[in-house]
Image 1 (spheres, rainbow, N blue to C red):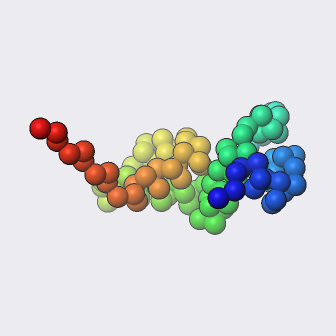
Image 2: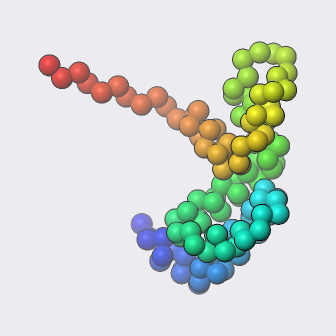
Length: 116
């Protein structure tokens, strides 16, 4: 497995190109946040690769609305719509919503054995 630095150099050549790619992928989700490029340049390569993967995954799913709908479907207990729940979910960042989807699909952790 390649280190994040080696992977960044192999795939993008420089951190600036990786940051540009992340900015392009996050554009539909980030809004108009000032200084986002500066913040991203300070992040580790690992974090940038995670952001890029999450942005691509959300785009493949159909954007933030589709991700919100998927989380809402998992969390909703009733057949009728719950506007408050949907609005609450929509307030979360896309990367956080994607982590909710992944966490829901993971198998339950094994219980630790009791020591006697």
